[in-house]
Image (cartoon, rainbow, N blue to C red):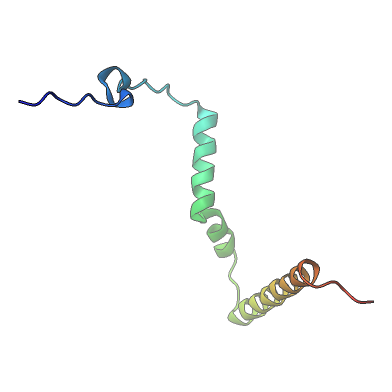
Amino acid sequence: MRPQKQKPYHQRKHFNKKKKKQPLSFDQMLRQFKKKCERAGIIQEVRKREYYEKPAQKKQRKKKEAIRREQLNQERNNTLGRPRLY
C-alpha cells in the first residue's frame, strides 16, 4: 500500500471549525432588508404605481428621459475625447 498524501494545511481538521454567528441586531437586519429591497427595485416600482399615469404622459416622460440621457452622453463624449474649439 502507498502512504497517504498529507492534506494541505487549510484542509486539516482543526481548520474546519466554524465559528458561531452572533444574532444580528434590529438595526443591522433593517439595513439588510432595505438593501435587498433597493436591489430588487421594489421601492421604485411602488413609487411608479402610486399614481395612475396616462399613456400619453408616459410617452412624454420617456421621451424627455431619452433626450436627457442623450444630452448627458454627448457632454461626456465632448469633454473626454476632443478638445473644444472656441
